[in-house]
Length: 105
Length: 366
Image 1 (cartoon, rainbow over the protein chains, first blue to last red):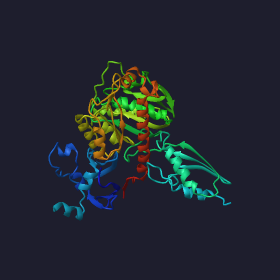
Image 2 (tube, chains in turn blue, yellow):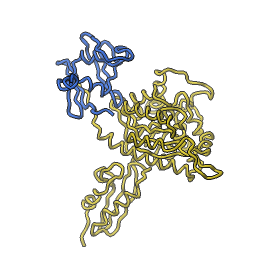
Image 3 (cartoon, rainbow over the protein chains, first blue to last red):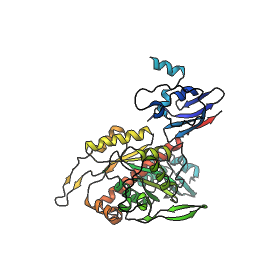
């Protein structure tokens, strides 16, 4: 089971970020390009290997949906929608300074 | 003489806990129709399932809680049941809005007796008094029509301005299977997207009616059908079926890992073909070893719901389309299934509380 669950996902259009708030109180602002770049789908990442950043210019988010009990699906304006971000994966991507620092250690 | 009031009775009943949910029966809203007249106290305890294994205990606990009150001269406790819903899944539209609980009977591998267990548990839940249906989601190897002894093309009926399929009823349970639409020797040779579509139709296009429980016989493994259920359907949880030997348990672990990953709660594990009682010598033989599933349950902290023996009567029941519970409801084997069904219903009541408490995910755009 995932350690933390998202309670709110807020696409803040003006700021160009998606704010994810978790049930342990944590929150992080994910820039859209960053989210798109780390799309976990096989089209973006191929099969196997480290997850890499795919640079997609001016990624625009069209829709956000929940998948079952365990993941979030982002649909982009160019029609790309195959990325299913499990809660654990989404949390591991959290770009807030606190999470970034702990990854660098 | 002191007079008792409703408030005093309710206050006293707050000391009685539901033994499975571990909360008091008053705050769970289980105390209904409370009447206090003079010293006469009467109420109904609305259980969360008619298959409740702990009715006696709750009855005794209520009596004890009220025994201390002065002024109570007569006590009349009756029992009812209102099954609570336990489905979760924020993302998807509910294909089965009239079904309160959806249980996936699953295993990491084939041949462990999922279909037999699913069919007999569905019949057992029905015998406990709950309205129950059975869905055969094993698209490639649908065996429920044979086990339940039903082979009828579902009829189209008009419902709410559209058409739905009316499921055939076998031994009192509405049953749906892809097998109803196939010739006996015909094979289903489909890739994933077709499977997903067929499953949608077997659920959404079927007029199930109001059901407390829908038992789903899953195909073996961790593939397309499982993904469809986890991504697109609201389910209550999964019941894992295992045989005792180590090599089978390895696949149980895989099934557990899959359900954990997609966050479908595991309601429990049962061990099938656990032992064989010889009709000649009466001795219990542990053909595939025994107790492996229970050890796995302990290791992973999954509720262990029971052991089902390997007997020719279960097999004959399946081959003749007459589950052992229907043919011989008083037999030892039937008792085993009834007991497991009670425990499963208990786990679903617990799941209903968790599902209610789980925070729903808000997706907004600002």
